[in-house]
Image 1: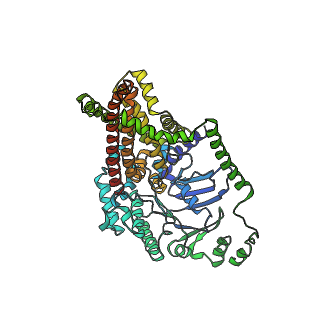
Image 2: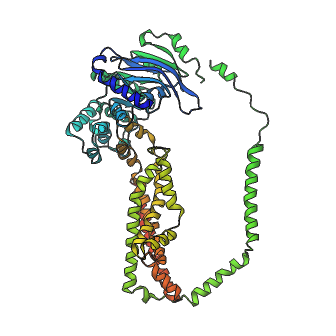
Image 3: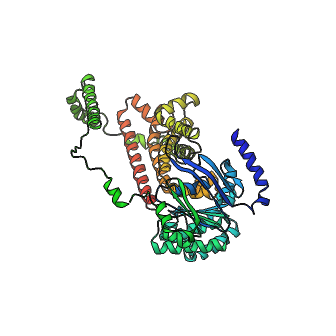
Length: 273
Length: 279
């Protein structure tokens, strides 16, 4: 019963989205709590923040702080246990089935381990970003519309992989694979990008190249970014806003320019080696 | 900070032994109990180990006197050869339908990608375990009593057998996939069917092909027997000749079965090796 009521409410809010979205944040997270098992430890212990249209927002914090869980809650790869997530003026938690899929296709996601399908070509990996918009019949025969194919080719050129279109994904290097992941996420024409440790599997130089590319593309397509990142230096360089997390709590929230040494020390105070 | 945490590591315990009281004692007690049960079974069943040794010379003698020479004329008869082809057809049909039906069942029965762990998972598991737990000869007897003698009963029995056999291997394979691509496809808003086709199938396609060939190989071996219980194919000839005590004919049929199974096994092994290289 409660779910039905929530869905009804979310439908009602979606109706009025157009008038209110300009004045509201793209993403609002309120009192978010997560525990993976009913009796298990709480990973997130009440997180609040909002992301605006212009933000390139980094989530930093020591291992085990709950950064990945936080990012994955937003497109419901992880189910929150308490609290509220409002994305594009629509409550995320009550969504089911096709409603959830329709929301997810507006959210681009880039992963730490790239999560490409290794035995598929680079082109098919990029095209699979359109699956949310592709009907069952077309996707079964891999018959993507001409405009999707053109967009895929354009994006592959944009990320510098125009010579690798027909290679298998596992024939590429780490940095190249992440570029495929970026192109796949941009295929969705996302209205927000979630990055889950996009550079942790890459070496320092390539990490910087990849972050610069993401930054450029996010500005070009005017997409706000919520990025969870391990490398503090890289976060300070490439993001304009920092959310610091520690042990399931938010410890810092502000522009990256205003961040002081003692703020960092506080966030990482609990890190044990 | 780092120094403080180094100091807080507790000092190593002074005494160390590989064997710890409750775990090791339980492990040895269980091993002892199993061995005792084996020894008791041998004693209780009155198994005479020397008679087992004596069985081999007797077997050789009987084979030499009664089963030799095999009646090769009998197995070159057109009717018999037709029954061999029927057996091959049954194994192909049973293997094909078994594989086709077991893929969706394996999907339900794979814990990581099933639709719902409370309903679909136990259903899929139950269907596969049910097909497996009953031997193919008993399936044959069941289908023969319902449908009457012939190929239909045998093919159905083989189908059920293959569902159990391939379903188990398929679902094990599905449970071992990398969930990363599955997460990625879910997060672009793909439907469950699209997730299966784009994120799951590419990871298991090669293994599934190998398993399908292996399933046919095993189904062919089972197909030689279903005829024994009225399921059609060459098994019926085996039953008739054994009951008529036509030992030389039985010998010929057994030789044919051995030859065919060997050919099937070598062929499927060769194919599976070729396919596994395509990874």
